[in-house]
Length: 115
Image (cartoon, rainbow, N blue to C red; front, side, top):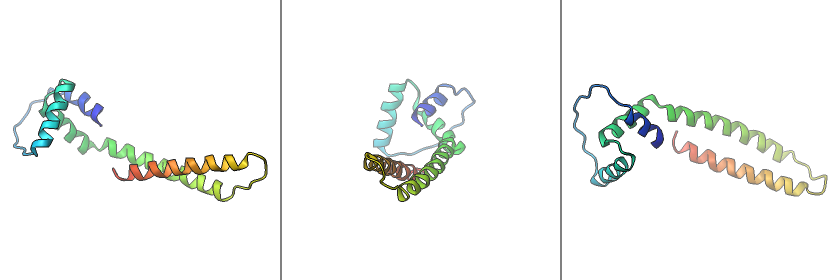
């Protein structure tokens, strides 16, 4: 989202109207430092973040990722539960599948925090 917010902030040229905004000092200091590093105004960054929030493009993308993870987790869970140890090395394949499952579950929980 940061990259997209900076891109939007650098491309803003619409007429502006004034509003009053009060934010914690710590947040203002972090915003000021970031805006200086990215060479954009704090106002432009705030405006672009509001625009991204209203468009919810990041939220929509996270929902798509969530849906894909749910599908993959379901398929992998099914494969693991039906896996039979037949050949030499199958135990290692099963462990890799379980590790992949754990990774997907971790990603799934992280994505869900933001939806």
